Length: 115
Length: 113
Image (tube, rainbow over all chains, first blue to last red; front, side, top):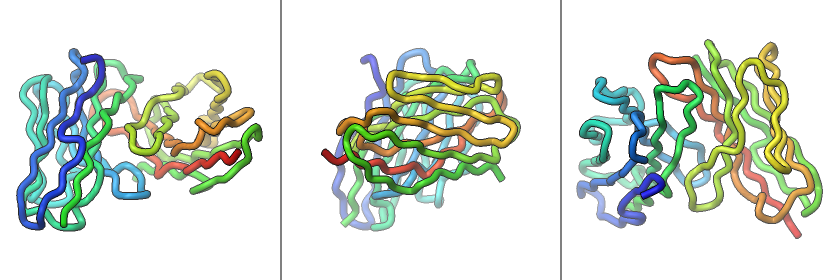
């Protein structure tokens, strides 16, 4: 597709369950980012992938959060043993990072609700 | 610590009026500053980018300014429309290397008819 695609768009789960969110970046974009946005709040950086380099995981809030990316393609964000405070919109963005001024292109987000 | 502060936190204006949003940053070294617009329930979309040597840039009714000496930027919206209602996010990036842009918390703008 032409843009960043995220799935599912909405996910309702019970506390304690694991969830997996998927992001398809724009083809050719070397950089991929995950952000969390709680209701009415700003974007919170979670993790950054750049090509085949080790990811920057400095934003992950706990060891319940993990993410993978194969090469420069699809990424998955996994949240284990979900808690109510994990409820938020999870946004994925990709960028042609080799350019300093590379614009971040965002998906529409995955809205997670933990009951 | 790199930080981006935006003001006001929220703003309500009448359709047709102008407004100015502010962004102060402490990101160093500096490469560029972008303003993004985030409509409710959507992902942010870039409106404009400012690099070190640029002072003013316009995109339709949006005009961004940058003062790299004082590390301040503004976004001016002229003749506001109902569709301008959104969150406006200031994002500052450094050059090369580990590239984690610093996001402001955004200004929520509501335009009333």
